[in-house]
Image (cartoon, rainbow, N blue to C red; front, side, top):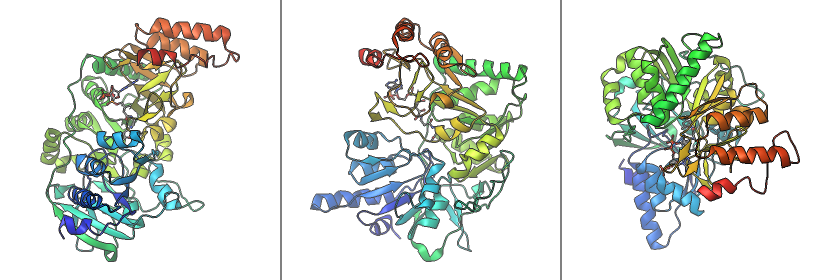
Length: 482
Ligand code: 0RQ
């Protein structure tokens, strides 16, 4: 069927579960056809807006195209498109920012409402009707199972050699019938290589031939190299003190350039036979797998630059033995993350002197991207590391503030904060000890005196002395520098 004909099957008010996770495996043709249809409907004065549920962020052809025509009433669970962000922050698009491991189970619990359509990119449809997933798995299993009707995009631009890399677990149940998730090592396979699909629900099959978004990474700069250096030194210290094995524990690495730079740092570091239990596999991690520094990686999505995708396609048969792509409720499962003892490394927007972290909001009210999987990993990790440049916007804003304007990760979930200035190890410290450490090790020298002055006066004047604060001026530093 043509993309336009398939798009005509989606009606106003429908909830559409789409594939896509950090710019990979998203449908490329039907969302754009839907955007054209929405634009025409709006020009005629007709209502046409849908709910868009995905795995995580997608690309301009999906989130951007639909947001540009004001076609999305509600979006969940994680997105990073600038046009969609502008709509959310203008109040014209509702957005529900959910822990990525929670999304599928919320759909099964019935917490999100009814799912009308699943719109899923696949690599191939097999003769028995099962589907070979493409470069991400995300929530595709749940969307296919839950939706009334299914639209498939078969992308011949994705290598069919991907077949065999995926592990789709069909053992999840609703409480009180749940059983342990039987993963005891990051490479364990517990499911099937393909997605099951009821052929009676398939209303359209659309052929495409298009690459995923080119997720480019900046070459590591001095700041991200310094952050990576502090983390590597810390990991070495932990090995020397017997708190980590020489091959470390499975690594989770968040999105963005700093995360990618840490992976690049591991390439030159002393650690061998690394593993990863993560959600996104970026260029830096692919390099570790190609060089043999990393032996295994479990993820839910590949999020690669065009160059890295070419390398991946060239070596796919060799890499297939080292990479497992799972559904996101398993890649981010708290039980597995806790059991394996994952080392979680995520970015932040601001952290306060007590270690609460804001990953999502600018000045407390505007969304940047979303919490993504950072909460799944941070709360359940063996080591929960957050990393950031110590300042933003050309040095005018301190990433370390007296009190965060929005809390995604509480002080109880944050063990280590790293900036280019240094590494604040908060393990075993009381709130006041944490504050002294964060100001001393992580804050930029230009902001240290103001933070120290706030903390000193709070220690004297705060009515409660456990977590001293001056509530009437906690946000003044932000106001004066933003
Ligand atoms: O804005 O591009 O307009 O200049 O925030 O900041 O420094 O480029 O850092 O790309 O690593 O993103 C937390 C957003 C960091 C990301 C966040 C502005 C800054 C810039 C981006 P500009 P950087 P990164 C696994 C884990 C949540 C989800 C997550 C994220 C922009 O890491 O989305 O961790 N995390 N998932 O200028 C004002 C401040 C600021 C600020 C930064 N204090 N005030 N602006 N910025 N700090 C993946 C998934 O879950 C899918």
